[in-house]
Image (cartoon, rainbow, N blue to C red; front, side, top):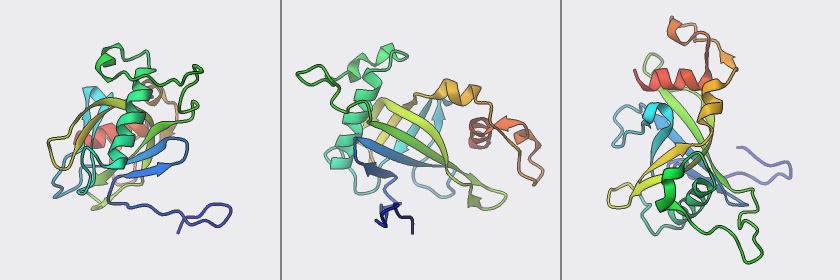
Amino acid sequence: RPSLSDGTMLRFNKYSGICEWKNDVIFLWVNIGAPGSEVVNEFLQGGKQITWFGGSRMHQHTPAIQNLLRIGKMVSSSNNNHPDLSAARVDNTNNEGRSNSGGKGGIILWCRVYDQTKRTFLPYTCLGRVGYRSHDPDVHPIQFVWDLLDYEVLVEGNMVVNGEENGVDNLRGKNAFEQIMIQANE
């Protein structure tokens, strides 16, 4: 089991797709291409957005969902690259003009792709920060669309990962994000 340097054991429900931390930090875990899945997570807008479905017990008023909405909207409202998010803007300052999150909050996306050849999921890859785009509280499980706030960094990333040795030549010379996008679109 993973633990912190002080010996504290880390625990979270891997089936919920979310792990909440202090300082308004949330990790989202997304599986792409899961066989037989009732929900289909996918990249939208050429990889600039991704869908995420909450766990089976989550709904509009679940504390975790409320935190996702609050933090996701706060992060998106401060991102000048998304001017069309005006409907999602919230007041994220206190009476002294400081950010309520102290500049430390955010939602971090971890993604893994199902490898049909190996019949298993590849390791999770961090795809950076996400911000709120939309959600549909009337579907079950609840569905979100998130903006990948670090999209440009992911696309321009210079960390090249060699393709697998199983003959997948189209992955050779691609960065990790490009590899995920290629596999997600197969």
